Image (cartoon, rainbow, N blue to C red):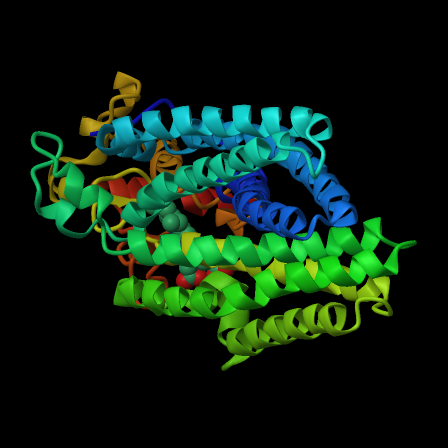
Length: 447
Ligand code: HEC
Protein backbone atom coordinates (compact mmCIF):
# COMPACT_ATOMS: atom_id res chain seq x y z
CA UNK A 1 0.00 0.00 0.00
CA UNK A 2 1.07 3.61 -0.59
CA UNK A 3 0.58 5.21 2.78
CA UNK A 4 2.67 8.01 4.23
CA UNK A 5 3.04 9.72 7.61
CA UNK A 6 -0.19 11.51 8.47
CA UNK A 7 -0.54 15.20 7.88
CA UNK A 8 -3.73 16.72 9.21
CA UNK A 9 -5.04 20.22 8.61
CA UNK A 10 -7.30 21.01 11.54
CA UNK A 11 -10.46 23.15 11.13
CA UNK A 12 -9.80 24.25 7.55
CA UNK A 13 -9.35 20.73 6.20
CA UNK A 14 -7.33 19.51 3.25
CA UNK A 15 -9.77 20.47 0.55
CA UNK A 16 -10.16 24.12 1.52
CA UNK A 17 -6.47 24.56 2.23
CA UNK A 18 -5.68 23.28 -1.22
CA UNK A 19 -8.46 25.31 -2.82
CA UNK A 20 -7.09 28.59 -1.43
CA UNK A 21 -3.88 28.05 -3.34
CA UNK A 22 -5.14 26.19 -6.38
CA UNK A 23 -7.98 28.54 -7.27
CA UNK A 24 -5.69 31.59 -7.11
CA UNK A 25 -3.26 29.66 -9.28
CA UNK A 26 -5.96 28.86 -11.81
CA UNK A 27 -6.91 32.55 -12.10
CA UNK A 28 -3.33 33.62 -12.59
CA UNK A 29 -2.06 30.80 -14.78
CA UNK A 30 -4.95 31.15 -17.22
CA UNK A 31 -4.51 34.92 -17.23
CA UNK A 32 -0.82 34.35 -17.99
CA UNK A 33 -1.37 31.89 -20.85
CA UNK A 34 -4.29 33.77 -22.37
CA UNK A 35 -2.52 37.06 -21.67
CA UNK A 36 0.57 35.99 -23.60
CA UNK A 37 -1.60 35.24 -26.64
CA UNK A 38 -3.63 38.45 -26.35
CA UNK A 39 -0.39 40.37 -25.88
CA UNK A 40 1.06 38.93 -29.07
CA UNK A 41 -2.12 39.85 -30.97
CA UNK A 42 -2.10 43.35 -29.50
CA UNK A 43 1.55 43.86 -30.44
CA UNK A 44 0.87 42.70 -33.96
CA UNK A 45 -1.97 45.23 -34.16
CA UNK A 46 0.11 48.08 -32.71
CA UNK A 47 2.98 47.40 -35.14
CA UNK A 48 0.65 47.07 -38.11
CA UNK A 49 -1.05 50.40 -37.43
CA UNK A 50 2.05 52.05 -36.01
CA UNK A 51 -0.16 52.93 -33.06
CA UNK A 52 2.07 54.39 -30.35
CA UNK A 53 -0.69 54.89 -27.79
CA UNK A 54 -1.89 51.31 -28.14
CA UNK A 55 1.70 50.11 -27.86
CA UNK A 56 2.13 52.03 -24.61
CA UNK A 57 -1.08 50.59 -23.28
CA UNK A 58 -0.02 47.03 -24.12
CA UNK A 59 3.17 47.66 -22.19
CA UNK A 60 1.12 48.60 -19.14
CA UNK A 61 -1.00 45.47 -19.56
CA UNK A 62 2.23 43.46 -19.90
CA UNK A 63 3.46 44.98 -16.65
CA UNK A 64 0.38 43.76 -14.78
CA UNK A 65 0.82 40.35 -16.41
CA UNK A 66 4.48 40.31 -15.49
CA UNK A 67 3.82 40.89 -11.79
CA UNK A 68 0.96 38.38 -11.78
CA UNK A 69 2.81 35.63 -13.63
CA UNK A 70 6.19 35.90 -11.92
CA UNK A 71 5.09 36.65 -8.39
CA UNK A 72 1.63 35.21 -7.79
CA UNK A 73 1.62 32.56 -10.54
CA UNK A 74 5.01 31.05 -9.83
CA UNK A 75 4.53 31.15 -6.05
CA UNK A 76 1.10 29.54 -6.05
CA UNK A 77 2.42 27.00 -8.58
CA UNK A 78 5.13 25.95 -6.16
CA UNK A 79 2.47 26.09 -3.45
CA UNK A 80 0.56 23.41 -5.31
CA UNK A 81 3.60 21.14 -5.24
CA UNK A 82 3.99 21.63 -1.50
CA UNK A 83 0.29 21.08 -0.87
CA UNK A 84 -0.14 17.95 -2.95
CA UNK A 85 2.96 16.45 -1.40
CA UNK A 86 1.65 16.77 2.12
CA UNK A 87 -2.04 16.25 1.33
CA UNK A 88 -1.92 13.29 -1.01
CA UNK A 89 1.59 11.93 -1.54
CA UNK A 90 0.20 8.64 -2.87
CA UNK A 91 -1.56 10.39 -5.73
CA UNK A 92 1.29 12.68 -6.66
CA UNK A 93 3.62 9.68 -6.47
CA UNK A 94 1.46 7.80 -8.96
CA UNK A 95 1.29 10.80 -11.29
CA UNK A 96 5.04 11.32 -11.11
CA UNK A 97 5.68 7.73 -12.08
CA UNK A 98 3.58 8.15 -15.18
CA UNK A 99 4.42 11.74 -16.10
CA UNK A 100 7.97 12.20 -14.87
CA UNK A 101 9.56 13.23 -18.16
CA UNK A 102 6.59 15.25 -19.28
CA UNK A 103 6.71 17.19 -16.04
CA UNK A 104 10.43 17.63 -16.35
CA UNK A 105 9.98 19.08 -19.84
CA UNK A 106 7.20 21.30 -18.52
CA UNK A 107 9.60 22.66 -15.92
CA UNK A 108 12.15 23.52 -18.61
CA UNK A 109 9.51 25.13 -20.81
CA UNK A 110 8.23 27.11 -17.85
CA UNK A 111 11.73 28.44 -17.21
CA UNK A 112 12.05 29.43 -20.86
CA UNK A 113 8.71 31.18 -20.59
CA UNK A 114 9.86 33.15 -17.54
CA UNK A 115 13.15 34.11 -19.20
CA UNK A 116 11.35 35.31 -22.33
CA UNK A 117 8.90 37.28 -20.21
CA UNK A 118 11.79 38.91 -18.35
CA UNK A 119 13.62 39.77 -21.60
CA UNK A 120 10.45 41.10 -23.11
CA UNK A 121 9.67 43.27 -20.16
CA UNK A 122 13.17 44.65 -19.68
CA UNK A 123 13.89 45.39 -23.34
CA UNK A 124 10.51 46.82 -24.36
CA UNK A 125 11.44 50.49 -23.85
CA UNK A 126 14.71 50.13 -25.81
CA UNK A 127 12.92 48.86 -28.88
CA UNK A 128 10.36 51.51 -29.71
CA UNK A 129 7.71 51.24 -32.34
CA UNK A 130 8.84 52.12 -35.86
CA UNK A 131 12.41 50.87 -35.39
CA UNK A 132 13.77 47.63 -36.93
CA UNK A 133 14.46 46.32 -33.43
CA UNK A 134 10.72 46.12 -32.83
CA UNK A 135 10.38 43.31 -35.37
CA UNK A 136 12.84 41.17 -33.39
CA UNK A 137 10.96 42.08 -30.29
CA UNK A 138 7.74 40.82 -31.81
CA UNK A 139 9.35 37.41 -32.35
CA UNK A 140 10.12 37.39 -28.63
CA UNK A 141 6.44 38.05 -27.86
CA UNK A 142 5.42 35.15 -30.09
CA UNK A 143 8.02 32.88 -28.48
CA UNK A 144 6.71 33.79 -25.07
CA UNK A 145 3.13 32.99 -26.12
CA UNK A 146 4.15 29.62 -27.56
CA UNK A 147 6.15 28.68 -24.44
CA UNK A 148 3.35 29.57 -22.07
CA UNK A 149 0.80 27.68 -24.15
CA UNK A 150 3.09 24.62 -24.11
CA UNK A 151 3.19 24.57 -20.31
CA UNK A 152 -0.61 24.51 -20.40
CA UNK A 153 -0.62 21.72 -22.98
CA UNK A 154 1.50 19.48 -20.73
CA UNK A 155 -0.28 20.23 -17.46
CA UNK A 156 -3.64 19.69 -19.15
CA UNK A 157 -2.55 16.20 -20.15
CA UNK A 158 -1.94 15.39 -16.48
CA UNK A 159 -5.21 16.96 -15.32
CA UNK A 160 -7.09 15.15 -18.08
CA UNK A 161 -5.45 11.88 -17.11
CA UNK A 162 -6.74 12.21 -13.53
CA UNK A 163 -10.30 12.43 -14.85
CA UNK A 164 -10.06 10.02 -17.79
CA UNK A 165 -7.06 7.67 -17.55
CA UNK A 166 -8.62 5.82 -20.51
CA UNK A 167 -6.84 2.79 -21.91
CA UNK A 168 -3.89 3.43 -19.57
CA UNK A 169 -5.85 1.53 -16.92
CA UNK A 170 -5.56 -1.60 -19.01
CA UNK A 171 -1.78 -1.31 -19.09
CA UNK A 172 0.24 -3.04 -16.43
CA UNK A 173 1.14 -0.23 -14.02
CA UNK A 174 3.71 0.13 -12.48
CA UNK A 175 5.44 -2.77 -14.27
CA UNK A 176 4.69 -1.71 -17.86
CA UNK A 177 2.73 1.49 -18.00
CA UNK A 178 1.44 2.74 -21.33
CA UNK A 179 2.88 6.24 -21.41
CA UNK A 180 1.38 7.18 -24.75
CA UNK A 181 -2.11 6.19 -23.61
CA UNK A 182 -1.70 8.28 -20.47
CA UNK A 183 -0.70 11.34 -22.48
CA UNK A 184 -3.35 10.93 -25.15
CA UNK A 185 -6.09 10.28 -22.63
CA UNK A 186 -9.62 11.02 -23.91
CA UNK A 187 -10.03 14.44 -22.28
CA UNK A 188 -6.62 15.92 -23.11
CA UNK A 189 -7.38 17.45 -26.52
CA UNK A 190 -10.87 18.74 -25.72
CA UNK A 191 -9.79 20.20 -22.39
CA UNK A 192 -6.71 21.78 -23.95
CA UNK A 193 -8.85 23.42 -26.64
CA UNK A 194 -11.36 24.50 -24.04
CA UNK A 195 -8.73 25.97 -21.73
CA UNK A 196 -6.90 27.71 -24.55
CA UNK A 197 -9.93 29.72 -25.64
CA UNK A 198 -11.20 30.19 -22.17
CA UNK A 199 -7.80 31.58 -21.13
CA UNK A 200 -8.00 34.04 -24.04
CA UNK A 201 -11.50 35.07 -22.99
CA UNK A 202 -10.38 35.56 -19.40
CA UNK A 203 -7.24 37.49 -20.37
CA UNK A 204 -9.10 39.62 -22.91
CA UNK A 205 -11.71 40.47 -20.26
CA UNK A 206 -8.82 41.32 -17.90
CA UNK A 207 -7.24 43.54 -20.57
CA UNK A 208 -10.57 45.33 -21.11
CA UNK A 209 -10.84 45.96 -17.38
CA UNK A 210 -7.24 47.18 -17.09
CA UNK A 211 -7.73 49.40 -20.16
CA UNK A 212 -10.72 51.00 -18.52
CA UNK A 213 -8.58 51.96 -15.53
CA UNK A 214 -5.48 52.98 -17.51
CA UNK A 215 -7.22 55.24 -20.02
CA UNK A 216 -9.45 57.41 -17.91
CA UNK A 217 -8.07 60.56 -19.54
CA UNK A 218 -7.65 59.18 -23.07
CA UNK A 219 -11.03 57.98 -24.24
CA UNK A 220 -9.95 57.58 -27.85
CA UNK A 221 -7.29 54.99 -26.98
CA UNK A 222 -9.75 53.37 -24.62
CA UNK A 223 -12.24 52.91 -27.42
CA UNK A 224 -9.68 51.42 -29.81
CA UNK A 225 -8.18 49.13 -27.19
CA UNK A 226 -11.41 47.89 -25.65
CA UNK A 227 -12.82 47.18 -29.10
CA UNK A 228 -9.70 45.18 -29.98
CA UNK A 229 -9.62 43.18 -26.74
CA UNK A 230 -13.38 42.73 -26.98
CA UNK A 231 -13.00 41.21 -30.44
CA UNK A 232 -10.40 38.75 -29.09
CA UNK A 233 -12.93 37.86 -26.38
CA UNK A 234 -15.96 37.39 -28.62
CA UNK A 235 -14.11 35.46 -31.30
CA UNK A 236 -12.88 33.00 -28.65
CA UNK A 237 -16.24 32.42 -27.00
CA UNK A 238 -17.59 30.16 -29.77
CA UNK A 239 -14.64 27.70 -29.92
CA UNK A 240 -14.57 27.76 -26.12
CA UNK A 241 -18.17 26.54 -26.01
CA UNK A 242 -17.60 23.93 -28.73
CA UNK A 243 -14.49 22.51 -27.05
CA UNK A 244 -16.20 22.81 -23.66
CA UNK A 245 -19.05 20.62 -24.84
CA UNK A 246 -16.66 18.08 -26.35
CA UNK A 247 -14.76 18.08 -23.04
CA UNK A 248 -17.99 17.57 -21.10
CA UNK A 249 -18.82 14.53 -23.23
CA UNK A 250 -15.61 12.84 -22.07
CA UNK A 251 -16.57 12.92 -18.39
CA UNK A 252 -17.59 9.56 -16.91
CA UNK A 253 -21.37 9.34 -16.44
CA UNK A 254 -21.04 9.19 -12.64
CA UNK A 255 -19.03 12.43 -12.74
CA UNK A 256 -21.64 14.18 -14.89
CA UNK A 257 -24.26 13.44 -12.26
CA UNK A 258 -22.22 15.25 -9.60
CA UNK A 259 -22.03 18.63 -11.36
CA UNK A 260 -24.73 20.34 -9.28
CA UNK A 261 -23.34 19.08 -5.95
CA UNK A 262 -19.86 20.17 -7.02
CA UNK A 263 -21.10 23.68 -7.72
CA UNK A 264 -23.44 24.27 -4.80
CA UNK A 265 -22.82 21.61 -2.14
CA UNK A 266 -25.14 18.81 -1.10
CA UNK A 267 -27.95 20.90 0.36
CA UNK A 268 -28.39 23.61 -2.28
CA UNK A 269 -27.95 21.08 -5.09
CA UNK A 270 -31.19 19.48 -3.93
CA UNK A 271 -33.10 22.59 -5.10
CA UNK A 272 -34.17 21.64 -8.65
CA UNK A 273 -32.63 23.75 -11.41
CA UNK A 274 -30.73 26.05 -9.05
CA UNK A 275 -27.28 25.14 -10.37
CA UNK A 276 -28.36 25.86 -13.94
CA UNK A 277 -29.93 29.16 -12.89
CA UNK A 278 -26.77 30.29 -11.10
CA UNK A 279 -24.61 29.35 -14.11
CA UNK A 280 -26.92 31.13 -16.56
CA UNK A 281 -27.13 34.17 -14.26
CA UNK A 282 -23.34 34.48 -14.16
CA UNK A 283 -23.08 34.03 -17.93
CA UNK A 284 -25.69 36.78 -18.47
CA UNK A 285 -23.81 39.14 -16.13
CA UNK A 286 -20.64 38.37 -18.06
CA UNK A 287 -22.31 38.99 -21.42
CA UNK A 288 -24.00 42.23 -20.34
CA UNK A 289 -20.98 43.79 -18.68
CA UNK A 290 -18.60 42.89 -21.51
CA UNK A 291 -21.12 44.16 -24.09
CA UNK A 292 -21.52 47.42 -22.19
CA UNK A 293 -17.76 47.98 -22.27
CA UNK A 294 -17.49 46.87 -25.88
CA UNK A 295 -20.30 48.94 -27.37
CA UNK A 296 -19.94 51.95 -25.14
CA UNK A 297 -16.30 52.12 -24.07
CA UNK A 298 -16.29 55.87 -23.55
CA UNK A 299 -19.28 55.99 -21.27
CA UNK A 300 -19.18 52.56 -19.56
CA UNK A 301 -18.98 53.07 -15.77
CA UNK A 302 -16.45 51.47 -13.48
CA UNK A 303 -19.23 49.19 -12.30
CA UNK A 304 -19.27 47.46 -15.71
CA UNK A 305 -15.56 46.67 -15.37
CA UNK A 306 -16.02 45.39 -11.83
CA UNK A 307 -19.05 43.24 -12.72
CA UNK A 308 -17.08 41.75 -15.62
CA UNK A 309 -14.23 40.88 -13.27
CA UNK A 310 -16.51 39.35 -10.64
CA UNK A 311 -18.66 37.40 -13.13
CA UNK A 312 -15.76 35.94 -15.11
CA UNK A 313 -13.77 35.23 -11.94
CA UNK A 314 -16.69 33.43 -10.30
CA UNK A 315 -17.32 31.38 -13.44
CA UNK A 316 -13.70 30.25 -13.57
CA UNK A 317 -13.47 29.52 -9.86
CA UNK A 318 -16.69 27.52 -9.96
CA UNK A 319 -15.62 25.62 -13.04
CA UNK A 320 -12.42 24.45 -11.37
CA UNK A 321 -14.25 23.60 -8.19
CA UNK A 322 -16.76 21.49 -10.10
CA UNK A 323 -14.00 19.78 -12.10
CA UNK A 324 -12.20 18.82 -8.90
CA UNK A 325 -15.34 17.70 -7.13
CA UNK A 326 -16.95 15.54 -9.81
CA UNK A 327 -13.86 13.32 -9.92
CA UNK A 328 -14.83 12.05 -6.46
CA UNK A 329 -14.65 9.47 -4.97
CA UNK A 330 -11.44 9.14 -6.98
CA UNK A 331 -8.32 11.22 -7.21
CA UNK A 332 -7.27 9.31 -10.33
CA UNK A 333 -10.44 7.98 -11.89
CA UNK A 334 -11.05 4.25 -11.41
CA UNK A 335 -7.45 3.87 -10.23
CA UNK A 336 -7.04 5.58 -6.86
CA UNK A 337 -9.59 6.85 -4.36
CA UNK A 338 -9.41 10.39 -2.97
CA UNK A 339 -7.90 9.02 0.23
CA UNK A 340 -4.96 7.40 -1.52
CA UNK A 341 -6.32 3.83 -1.46
CA UNK A 342 -5.84 2.11 -4.81
CA UNK A 343 -8.97 0.53 -6.23
CA UNK A 344 -7.08 -2.69 -6.90
CA UNK A 345 -6.01 -2.91 -3.23
CA UNK A 346 -9.58 -2.69 -1.93
CA UNK A 347 -10.40 -6.45 -1.86
CA UNK A 348 -7.13 -7.18 -0.05
CA UNK A 349 -7.69 -4.42 2.52
CA UNK A 350 -11.21 -5.63 3.16
CA UNK A 351 -9.97 -9.18 3.65
CA UNK A 352 -6.68 -8.73 5.51
CA UNK A 353 -7.37 -5.36 7.05
CA UNK A 354 -6.00 -1.85 6.65
CA UNK A 355 -3.99 -1.94 9.88
CA UNK A 356 -2.00 -4.95 8.84
CA UNK A 357 -0.98 -3.29 5.58
CA UNK A 358 -0.44 0.29 6.76
CA UNK A 359 3.20 1.32 6.80
CA UNK A 360 3.10 4.31 9.12
CA UNK A 361 1.38 2.76 12.10
CA UNK A 362 2.77 1.88 15.52
CA UNK A 363 2.78 -1.89 16.04
CA UNK A 364 0.61 -1.68 19.16
CA UNK A 365 -2.34 -0.62 16.96
CA UNK A 366 -2.13 -3.41 14.44
CA UNK A 367 -4.33 -5.71 16.49
CA UNK A 368 -7.56 -4.44 17.96
CA UNK A 369 -8.21 -5.03 21.66
CA UNK A 370 -11.03 -3.68 23.85
CA UNK A 371 -8.49 -1.27 25.35
CA UNK A 372 -7.14 0.25 22.14
CA UNK A 373 -10.30 0.02 20.03
CA UNK A 374 -11.17 3.74 20.15
CA UNK A 375 -7.57 4.77 19.54
CA UNK A 376 -7.35 2.46 16.54
CA UNK A 377 -10.62 3.92 15.28
CA UNK A 378 -9.06 7.37 15.48
CA UNK A 379 -6.07 6.14 13.48
CA UNK A 380 -8.41 4.78 10.84
CA UNK A 381 -10.23 8.12 10.70
CA UNK A 382 -6.92 9.87 10.06
CA UNK A 383 -5.91 7.30 7.48
CA UNK A 384 -9.09 7.34 5.43
CA UNK A 385 -11.38 10.24 6.26
CA UNK A 386 -9.23 13.29 7.00
CA UNK A 387 -8.80 13.92 3.27
CA UNK A 388 -12.27 15.43 3.13
CA UNK A 389 -13.41 15.80 6.74
CA UNK A 390 -12.11 17.61 9.79
CA UNK A 391 -13.03 16.74 13.36
CA UNK A 392 -14.87 19.99 14.11
CA UNK A 393 -14.19 22.45 11.28
CA UNK A 394 -15.04 22.34 7.56
CA UNK A 395 -17.22 19.27 6.73
CA UNK A 396 -16.87 18.31 10.41
CA UNK A 397 -17.22 14.59 11.01
CA UNK A 398 -18.50 15.45 14.49
CA UNK A 399 -21.55 17.13 12.90
CA UNK A 400 -21.99 14.43 10.29
CA UNK A 401 -22.54 11.78 12.97
CA UNK A 402 -24.43 14.00 15.40
CA UNK A 403 -27.25 12.15 17.11
CA UNK A 404 -26.22 8.75 15.74
CA UNK A 405 -25.34 5.87 18.03
CA UNK A 406 -22.43 3.54 17.49
CA UNK A 407 -24.59 1.00 15.70
CA UNK A 408 -25.96 3.60 13.24
CA UNK A 409 -22.47 4.88 12.53
CA UNK A 410 -21.20 1.34 11.99
CA UNK A 411 -24.04 0.78 9.54
CA UNK A 412 -23.31 4.03 7.66
CA UNK A 413 -19.58 3.28 7.35
CA UNK A 414 -20.57 0.12 5.51
CA UNK A 415 -22.20 2.23 2.78
CA UNK A 416 -20.15 5.38 2.44
CA UNK A 417 -20.14 4.97 -1.33
CA UNK A 418 -23.94 4.80 -1.52
CA UNK A 419 -26.26 6.62 -3.96
CA UNK A 420 -26.86 9.30 -1.30
CA UNK A 421 -23.14 10.04 -1.04
CA UNK A 422 -21.52 8.64 -4.20
CA UNK A 423 -18.59 11.03 -3.75
CA UNK A 424 -17.20 9.12 -0.73
CA UNK A 425 -14.85 6.18 -1.21
CA UNK A 426 -15.95 2.91 0.39
CA UNK A 427 -14.39 2.07 3.75
CA UNK A 428 -11.25 0.01 3.25
CA UNK A 429 -10.94 -2.51 6.05
CA UNK A 430 -12.35 -5.49 7.87
CA UNK A 431 -15.55 -5.63 9.83
CA UNK A 432 -13.61 -5.34 13.06
CA UNK A 433 -11.85 -2.21 11.83
CA UNK A 434 -15.15 -0.73 10.76
CA UNK A 435 -16.47 -1.30 14.29
CA UNK A 436 -13.38 0.39 15.76
CA UNK A 437 -13.90 3.45 13.54
CA UNK A 438 -17.56 3.54 14.60
CA UNK A 439 -16.54 3.35 18.25
CA UNK A 440 -14.21 6.31 17.81
CA UNK A 441 -16.75 8.42 15.89
CA UNK A 442 -19.35 7.67 18.56
CA UNK A 443 -17.06 9.24 21.18
CA UNK A 444 -17.20 12.53 19.24
CA UNK A 445 -20.92 12.55 19.87
CA UNK A 446 -20.60 12.65 23.61
CA UNK A 447 -18.68 15.91 23.64
C1 HEC B 1 -13.65 12.18 -1.01
C2 HEC B 1 -14.01 12.90 0.14
C3 HEC B 1 -14.53 12.15 1.35
C4 HEC B 1 -13.93 11.12 2.05
C5 HEC B 1 -12.57 10.50 1.78
C6 HEC B 1 -14.82 10.81 3.14
N1 HEC B 1 -15.93 11.59 3.09
FE1 HEC B 1 -17.54 11.51 4.32
N2 HEC B 1 -18.43 12.98 3.28
C7 HEC B 1 -17.87 13.69 2.25
C8 HEC B 1 -18.78 14.72 1.82
C9 HEC B 1 -18.52 15.73 0.72
C10 HEC B 1 -19.94 14.58 2.63
C11 HEC B 1 -21.22 15.36 2.54
C12 HEC B 1 -21.19 16.64 3.31
C13 HEC B 1 -22.51 17.39 3.14
O1 HEC B 1 -23.55 16.74 3.12
O2 HEC B 1 -22.44 18.57 3.03
C14 HEC B 1 -19.68 13.48 3.54
C15 HEC B 1 -20.60 13.04 4.50
C16 HEC B 1 -20.32 12.06 5.43
C17 HEC B 1 -21.25 11.57 6.43
C18 HEC B 1 -22.68 12.04 6.59
C19 HEC B 1 -23.53 11.20 5.68
C20 HEC B 1 -25.02 11.41 5.87
O3 HEC B 1 -25.74 10.47 5.61
O4 HEC B 1 -25.39 12.53 6.26
C21 HEC B 1 -20.59 10.63 7.17
C22 HEC B 1 -21.14 9.81 8.31
C23 HEC B 1 -19.26 10.53 6.63
N3 HEC B 1 -19.12 11.40 5.58
C24 HEC B 1 -18.29 9.67 7.12
C25 HEC B 1 -17.07 9.44 6.53
C26 HEC B 1 -16.09 8.52 7.04
C27 HEC B 1 -16.24 7.67 8.28
C28 HEC B 1 -15.02 8.57 6.18
C29 HEC B 1 -13.74 7.77 6.24
C30 HEC B 1 -13.86 6.35 6.29
C31 HEC B 1 -15.34 9.53 5.13
N4 HEC B 1 -16.58 10.05 5.39
C32 HEC B 1 -14.52 9.83 4.07
C33 HEC B 1 -16.66 13.45 1.66
C34 HEC B 1 -15.78 12.45 2.03
